[in-house]
Picture 1: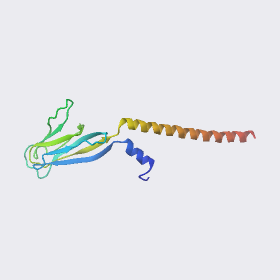
Picture 2 (picture 1 turned 90 degrees about the horizontal axis):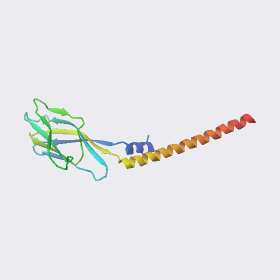
Picture 3 (picture 1 turned 180 degrees about the vertical axis):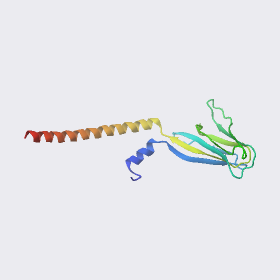
Picture 4 (picture 1 turned 60 degrees about the vertical axis):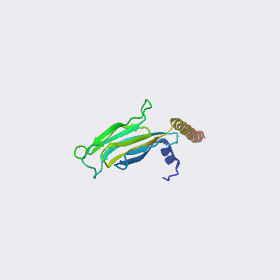
Length: 162
C-alpha cells in the first residue's frame, strides 16, 4: 500500500497522533516546558515514566508539575520523590496534562528522565464531517452495486422467458 493511498490518508486523519516525548532535568536544567501548539487541535501530554539516571546521587529528587488548574492558578504540584537506593523509578498511569505544562526539579541534582507521549487529538467537527462523507460514499457504492445486480437478474429472467 503506497503512502498516498486514500486508505492511509484516512487512517492518519481519523486517529489521534501520538509522538514519543521525553526530557532530562538536572542541576543545569531544572525545568522543561511543553508548549501549546497553535493548530487549534487538542493536545495532551501523557507522562508515563520518571526515573533517575545512573549518575544520580543517593539524595532525594523531587519532580513537580506546573500546569494551569481548573481555577486558572499555576501552582507546582509534586508528582514524584525518588532516591537511588529506595525508589529509582516510577511508572505512571492516567496522568494526562494539557499544555502548556512545566516540569520542575524541585530538589536533587539529577539527572532525572521523564518520558511519555504527546498526543494530538482530531477536532470533533472535522471528524464528524469526514465521517458523513464516508457514509455518503458507501451509500452511493451500495446503490451502484444494487443497480448492477438488478440489471444482471433482469437479463437472467428475460433469458428464462425466451
